[in-house]
Structures are given as C-alpha cells and as structure tokens.
Length: 252
Image (cartoon, rainbow, N blue to C red; front, side, top):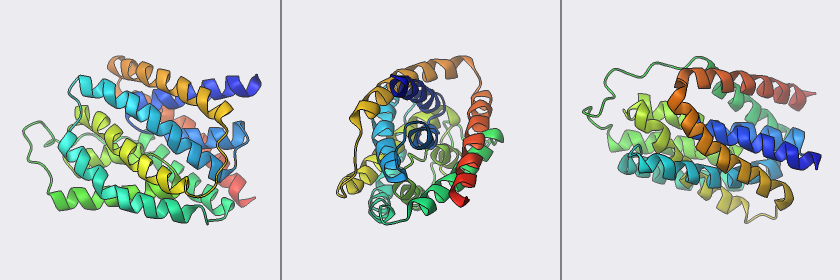
C-alpha cells in the first residue's frame, strides 16, 4: 500500500511538471523510481520513458486543442532526434549503473539551474518572426535526441529553451511543441531499450502513469493561473535537491 501511495504522489508531481512546463517530468520520475520505489537505474530509465510517453501524449492533446503546437517545426525537430535517440538508447543499457546515475545527476543539475534561472524570451520570437533554418532545427533536434536515448529522459527541460532561443518558437507555443518532441524521441529510445530484457513492474508503473496523466491536466490549468517563471523555480528547487543527492550517492 505504501508503494502505491508513493507511486501516485510521485506520478502526480511528474504530471504537473510536464503539463505546466512542457518538461521536467522524467528528471523527476527516474529518481523517484530509483530511490522511493526500488527500481534499478536501467529499470527506472526504461519505465520513465514509458510514463513520459503516455503523459506527454495526453498533455499534447490538450495543448493542440488550443492551437499551441507548431506541428511542422516540432515534427522536424523530433524527426532529427529519432535515430540518435535509438542509437544512444541501445548503448545506454551497456553502461554501468553508477556511471548512468552520475550522468543523470549532472544533467538534472543543469536542468535545475535552468529552471531556477529561466531566461527571458527573445524579443523576436513572435508569431511574425522568420522560422529558423531547417538545418539548425535538425542539428538541435539530433543533439537532444541523443540525450533522450542515453539517459532515458524526455528532454523537455532542454527542448523548451531550445525551441525559444534557437528555433524562434514563441514561449506560448514552445511548451506544447516540446511535448510533441518529447513523445517522439521517447518512443524511439524506448523501442531500442525494450529489445534488451528489462523488468517492467506494472504494479508500480500503472498507478504512477495514471496519476501523471491526471497531474498533466492539472498542470496545464495551473500554468494558466501561475507564471511559468514561478513554476520553474518551484520545480527547479526540488530537482536541484534530488540531483545533489543522486550525485553524492553515485560517488559514495
């Protein structure tokens, strides 16, 4: 019963992050699965991808209904990351657990820092701004796809600022568009991971995912009432504490 409650609470937090910020879900899901629910790093990253896929897809539908998804830009961005995500996803299962945990912790620190110090949206990212060159979109998407596959994260905390600063997508559309990218990259990474036998603890994953889906809807509504910067600072503080703990644990 305790594990079920933990899974439900952790899932709700993950959903709030994805629904409200368009990212940050998997970097919270993986530590929760490892330290609160007893998953190994390999099991946690695989389960985390599964949870993020379902949750991101749900949140994507909600944003799409309001016209906040740049399908063409997001599609190109996501397509460029499919192959890198698949390749690094296959390689990651051969990496020692300690190294994988340390790498994830470092990435989580980067994500937390970005959340705690969000950058202002560039002035020329309005609806009338010229779209970024396709080559730049593809290169950025490929790099983030590689990160997604290797560390088992959706990468939304990197996708959103990349869409805004590099691809010139307005912040209002960046969150929704990032969910498209997260879903596609996570599916590619998960497909290669499932080719290697990995335990999937459905008794934990199912309630975790269900709570995350519900949390994503609440996160979207919360984002309409609370500023994005405030939400980023809240999740950033939580994530930084988790990341420091993981980093210490990986080297001791």
